[in-house]
Image 1 (cartoon, each protein chain N blue to C red):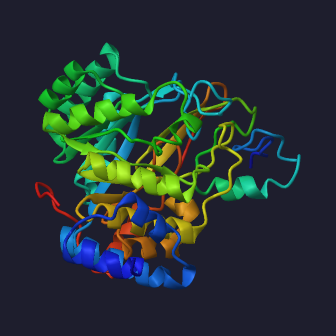
Image 2 (cartoon, rainbow over the protein chains, first blue to last red):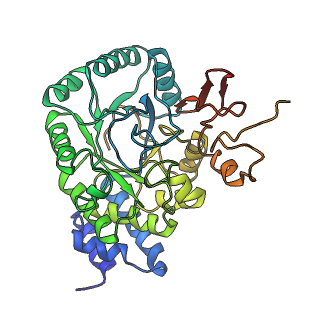
Image 3 (tube, each protein chain N blue to C red):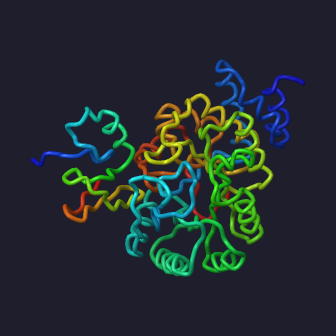
Length: 331
Length: 62
């Protein structure tokens, strides 16, 4: 077997074939002195198979807190002693958030609810919200409302939802250490329904939750098997009161190796910076990731935590001469 | 000027410890506790800001 970066250069960069789980383990084990070479290769892969453009998205929490699930990283679970309180956003505030997002040049606006799956009240609120946004704002609408039935998939599709987010969260072999109130397979099934529906599937996960490098590679391989349109990559931001609240923040170099590995697993996907990057990577690392495989960002704040100012990311993209994707185009 | 009696992040008394880590953390998260009465606040994060409402002491925002 040859050097893994030479193999990746031929297999992924030249042929567009993602690395296997075993190959990804080798990438994740690559030494620090080869990190610049790894990131440069991942960037070349991203430019060749996705282009120069970067997709910008904003997110908003429609229903915060009080979730019955026990995802150990999440401050919105009602099962932990997190200080996050339940709150619903009203429609005028939702429309205002969409307007704020669109002003940044973002093409996607994702409406998120902390639920196991949507009930009638939530579906009704989402429908009203989408109609109100569409009447005032020119932006693609995505949703993240938990696990769905086929009927709900069809309803959301009929509402004009452009993309649906449902993360795998972690590798199948580690999932039981992260969530006990539902199974990896339940998540997988929702993702399959979305993929078949005509909506774009957005499916990623979190790293830095105590998983092994092998399990990190496993997550990338399982995502590649699902073949989502977009993969949001989150880095654990340990939240007070959650079971993972005392974990160490992931090392920046490990985070960058993970970004590159995910790009080498999925050369054609939209690979998005999501939560935790500010804490894990800082400003310099954010730049390195954009030059190491990332081609999409969440601008502004997250659901319960804050991000960098949107202008900081947009200025960085301009400095790196990475054009922001325009509306109605698909990467 | 209002004296902050409680830490907006951890909810402990401001005089109890230096809260340096809390101040650092509050650069990347909104306060969750009212700094006057330590009640948990209802917080809504928006793409470009946040609001936090205490049932007794009213709303603060970014």
